Structure formats: structure tokens, C-alpha cells
Image (cartoon, rainbow over all chains, first blue to last red; front, side):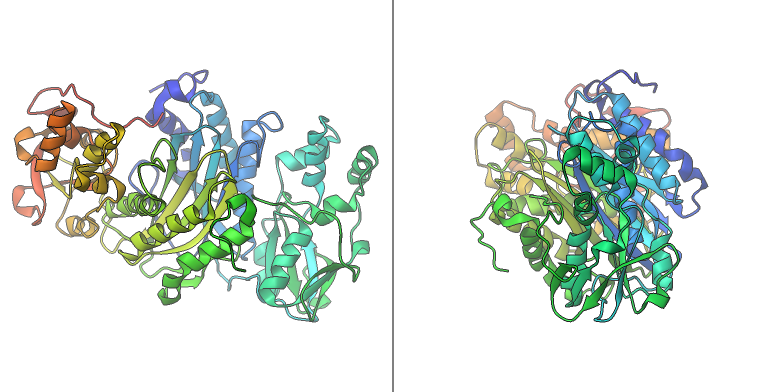
Length: 320
Length: 320
């Protein structure tokens, strides 16, 4: 059934929308030998090779996690997928399959949903993962619910394994998305590189498994803010973590934004999330893989400090 | 951290809420040897025994799929779980693990979320399944996103296997929840047995696997309405299905509601969903397991008829 892309979801109806979405998402599925039954039945059926399944779920709400005037539907699709793929990365695993729930107002253009699905599928394809199921329903605002399944070929790296004496290391861009969000919030569209970093994060997808293989003792992705995530590691591991300010090179676009907005650019680095960088602890500097930067150390005690002192800037994101 | 149950989600904050929810959901987890890592890390890690994973996802939106004045939070928890567990049942599988996403207004009482989680966990426990992860966030209205993972020990039964000459059979209560919803919609609270059927469906959880073992050729759960689901089977299988009106005993409470509301009680049976009955096709009457009722037959052609004619009543639920 051909569907008018200028129609709204209310005009298209659920089944019209789903058939279009499946067509949008389905191309990669035909090549995925692990998918025995794809979308269209009561459930998808997957072949699991390694016996361990890693699973994570996340919600995104319009106006809270994204704005339609700040990012295209395709961008939102990329971001929604990236955020979830990153959770598997943060276990040292490999993402394989995803489901999407899309709750949306009846007056949402079908084209928005299709563009969203295309962006989502593209991001998944970049790591070889496929969308195997979903649900759509009407709601007052757009709510995107994603569940991702992955596998671990090495032991998953938890948040709880950091030990005093370990070094803290980071890989991936950090602070760029927060800088982009800050300029969008002031009504600007540049520096473009930061706005793009917010719209389409580029998580270091290969680095989680790499960290696991290198013997990382704990691992987390930075979605809520670097210091907030360090605090999660510290709490789960029963240790203290000190972050060194001088370990970070402040990239030029963040310097420019700090100057324009009258803000310390280190705020974006220490408090920003959304880049989905990875933060890990390793037994010593020698075990830190190439491409990771040592940014602090693990100590006896509890809590997170910056250069040995309490940090009084914003440390992350509050969900309620 | 003790949390005031009279608080709202906004007052409790995300991490306060999550720790309470995990405590609520976590008891069953300690006994689940398939859960290697439970909630609290970036992802849960599951041991999969049989190599095939069955996965399904569903959304429920307040005001559309449930109303807080029509069902308690615990009821909504039971319903949300039942709806998803039923999707695994409808593949002939066994549900094992679930994730929940809860988007909710900041002024929602924490107690509602905890009662919801308790009902959800109880329903899962009734089939031996556990909650392994989730996410919470603020939204204008309550949106519940559930993903369920299960396993199939026999080949999953799809929607597409019905063949002309097969018999159509049903198991589980059918029309009760729709009857309950109809009386709630008129402001009544009785017949109580129907209202309870709406609030806490009792899907025939053992019957899906049983149907698979008995050689069912197609299988679906009735969540959108019996004729609507029959139409899904017919379309996926490329066949016609005829449903026989006289195959159904109209239960007394539905007769009473029909009389009170001036409606044909068969409407609830043919058009109603939400009981999560199972509808299947079998090669012949002899292969239909005990507890199933033959309600029609599969023919050459397409579409669904009732007693050989087109049905002009409501056939099910529209999501947009």
C-alpha cells in the first residue's frame, strides 16, 4: 500500500505506518543471518551465537531529550540509536539487534517518522546491528523507546570493578555535544562542528570491546556528564575518583563557545553528556589502549574530586 | 536511601526512584540463574540456554491504553506485563526477561510507580520471568514501554502458516475485558467479574507452547480484537477465514452487559481485545488440544467472514 508521505500519522493509521517503517528498516534484515523471524509477527526470533545476551533500554522524550527545531528527524534517529548502541559498547559488547517503540501525536507528519527510521537504521547499520521489531501508538508528545540486544565475546566490564591505584581513561569526543546544545539553546547554529556533534554523536563504537580485551576494570559511557558518570563508577566500585583538569585539551570550538557565552569551556567537558564517550579504569598506564587518554586516578575513599577538590560546577543531567 | 512514598517523582529524582524500583523488582532476580548482571549497570547480561531468543516490544499510553481512575497502579502493572508476556505466548515460546521504560509526569506520586512495579513483577513471576533493566524519564503523560525476551524450545509458530482446510481454534476468555471496558466507559463498576477481567487479564500462558507442540499451523494473541487478529492470520497466510457465531457460548455477565447497554454481546466477543486469548489454526479437529474451542475454519481466498458473510460490527482497535 503506497502511503502519502505528506499525510499525518492519524491519516495513515497504524498499519499503514508500520508497513512503511518496516520497508524503511527492513533492507538490512535480509542480510542478517541471525534474524530467523523479523518484524511483522508477534515477536522476532533471533539466533544467539555466543550464549550471552546483553540488553539495555532507553527512553527519549520530545522537548526533553530532543527538539524538532534543533535537529532533523534523521538526526533524532541517529541519536536515539547511538545512545542505545553506546550502552552495549559500555559493557564491552557488540550490539546486534534493536526494537523501537514510537509514541507520537496523530498530527505528526508521516515523513518525520520515516526520516527518523532511516536515520535510526543508518546508525545501526554502521555497527552491523539491525532493527527486528517495534510498536507505534498515539500520544500527546513524541516518546521513543529503544531496546538493544548485544553479545559479549569477552566477560562484560561492569561499573563496579575499579580499584584504588587504577588509572581513569577516556576515549571519544567529550564536551562537543554539550557545547552544541548550549549554542542551540541561545538560538545560534554555529560553531557548526559542535551543533553537528550534538545532532549526530559519534560514539567510539570499537573502543568498548577493546577496553575489555585490554583488561579494563570498570567501564561506562558518558551520557549524563563526565563527572556524573565518574561518580557512578566510584559508587558502584566503592572507591574515590579524582579527575585532572589539565589532562584535557580544550578543543578550539569549545574555547570559542565559552568566550561567546561567557562560560568556562571546561564546564562542557566535565559536565556534558550526549557525546557517548567511554570512561574506563585500567590497572595501570601501560594497559591503557592507544586512543585513550588518562584523565585521572582511582583512590581510596568515596566520591569524585577535580584536582583533589570538590567541584562546584554542573556535573550532569537530571531526569526528573 | 529511604524515599517518602508520598513524594512525587519530581521530588524523589530519577536515581531515588530507580533504587526503589529495583528493590521492588529485584527480589525474583536473586533466584534467576540466567541473569548474570541485573539492573544497575549499562546493560543487563543474560545467559541464553537454547540459542533462540524471541523478542517483542509494546507501548502503553495513559488515557489511551489505561486510565488511572479505571484501574489501580498495580492493575496497570499486571496488564502491561500480561500484554507483553502474551506476545511470547503467541509465538509458542516461554517468556524469560523483561525491560521497562517508564516516562511519567514529575507530579506522579512515587507510590503509583512502586505499585505499578509491584503488579508488573507479580505478573512476570507468575510465568517465571524477571525484570532485568529499565529506564525512567519525565514526560507530560505516562508512557510505559516494555520489551520482553523469551525462548522457544520448539519452532516458533508464525502468523503465516494457516492453510485452507485448517480449523480455527481459540483458548482463554474472550470478550470479558471488552465488556469490562464498556461498563467502565459508562461510569459503572459492575459486573465486577468483567471489570476485573479488564483490569487484570488472565492470558492462557501455558497454551502457546502447547499449541506449538500440537502442531498449530499459525498462532496469534487476541489483543486488538478477535476478527482483527483473524484478519492478520488470513493476510499473513494468504487465506480466508470464516468465524462461526454459534461456536461461542456467550457468558452470562456479557449477556447482562449487552442487555444493560443495549448492545449485542457478540460484539464484545468478535471485536474485543485485551483478554489476550490465543487464536490458532490446526491441521484438523483431532489435533486441537483440550481446552481449545473450534470457532471457525480456513478457506481459499482472502479476508475474514462471520457465518460466511461480511461482518459489519466493530472488528478491533485502531492505534492512530
